[in-house]
Length: 202
Image 1 (cartoon, rainbow, N blue to C red):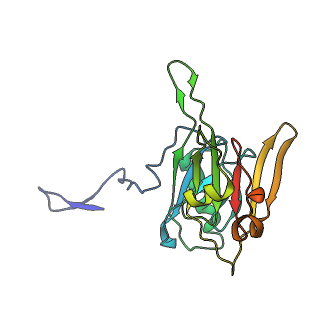
Image 2 (image 1 turned 120 degrees about the vertical axis):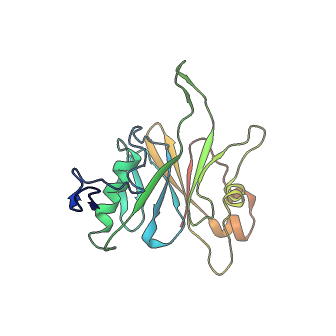
């Protein structure tokens, strides 16, 4: 960038050059992501709305175009630049990625008090992915969660639904009989959800 000198009429170069901040430079670079966080990811050049992804116990997220990507231990800014590099290798000539943490464990920083909320997570082919509180006075079933998350069910296209459930022996995959639960309305197949369940609608 050149500025005209007010006295000698000469061009003078700015030294050092001024760096222009981008939308990625202002992303959080302090807090590191942890399992249970919900992050929103948006690729500006993709011209689509941001999508929410759950940081799994394994430390990974399902990143757009790239698939499973490690997120635990990274800040939002670091993860955004990591996704940018991957996208520019085979999907976009130039990629601008924003990552924000929409949900994180509720913690009182001054008193080390953890607020214990019972939640489940809806992911995949639903309108609103993310965490949902389990009601205290009633059970929440798979169909109840789908109503909250905005999933459209039709006889022409019955989705596959998997529940990922934590157990002392590790994560357990439970395949829901969606035709019986959603189309035939058989209540015995409309499974009740437990705390920390992750429901994936494919």
